Amino acid sequence: MRLRAMTSSGDMQFGNGTGNFLINSPAMVAQLVMTRLDLWCGQWFLDFSQGTPYSTSILGKNTKSTYDGAITQRILSTPGVASLQTYQSQLNSARKLTWEATINTLFGRTSLGGTTFLPSSGAQLQDNSANLLFDSFGNPMFGS
Image 1 (cartoon, rainbow, N blue to C red):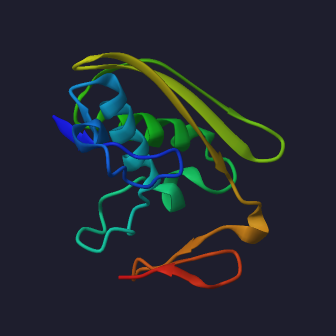
Image 2 (tube, one colour):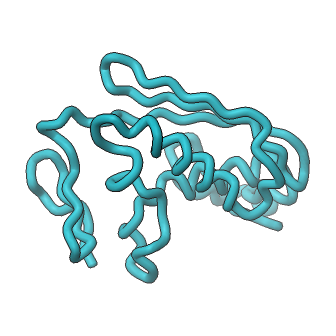
């Protein structure tokens, strides 16, 4: 497998020839996992069913029983992931969800993690039947 490397700010790397690509490496699979977790359900205009179910399984109050499953399922369904060795998450009083995972890939083992801020009840995102999400100010984030 071959994947264009991304900078720490999420931009694709150019100008280094073959040095711009991750090829058959654990880092390549980790980048795929993080990219898949960054995509929200309903955000990709070609297939609204693709993405991480933030609005239905992760954001909101009392979602402990669903957010770990949603994140681990998204990790395990990523191409190149062989198994999930460890996973842990912690939700603090500021509603910051931090997670860490160690995955076994087809090319070796790697660790990764992320942070998501779960909004308070007054700032929750809303999802309607037209796959349109709104930010906490009521502005559309993307649409169908």
